[in-house]
Image 1 (cartoon, rainbow, N blue to C red):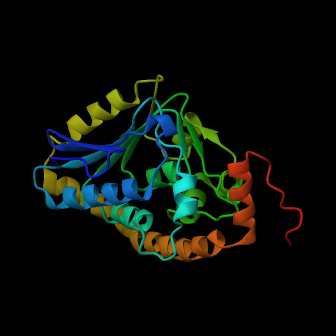
Image 2: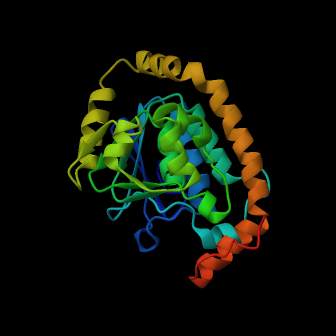
Image 3: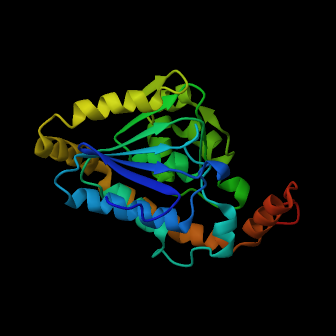
Length: 260
């Protein structure tokens, strides 16, 4: 791609791999509406570009992403499913070519749930995964309510989604979210090695194999995505979410004692 459509998202085609890099290190690569829109477009264009055989995500500054930029989110919250974040998730689900990710540091919220739709993920040993939706008065997104109990088992899903507990790279690998754990700082090099191998393989056979791997759960994933999306929009308007966001911006502990 000739020019990055968002200054906080770096998109570079290196050989047959399109790299999409979250590049906002001063905000721990927190994602804005503009970044979601640009990433969704880059994914869709990759599917239509015969020169691109795989897409890889990474973050700048030793951080994958701290998730949604809550200030951007609060200023212009999504009001329908036709929003950049939902288009980004749908683009991930529907991607025909392999999608990869290299994770260093924190991967918060959608920074974790997007990995459920990636085909190969590498992570540095100190990478930290966190889905704190309930703590923000929200609910799971990205089809995580489908994937996490299916892959990690209900007990771990309850800890990670219901309690919003963070977990490490080894746990993520055990749960099948991560293919390879590396020394810190080595996730991208490991992913490049996987990508270099992948793009030498017959491209149509790769696409067909990905389609077959995803086919058994494709309808259920999209159904979960839409179901979660509807409830997420409701939760955004809830008094609990308003209290959680107000507490975040005031740097205080939220008080949910008055809610029933």
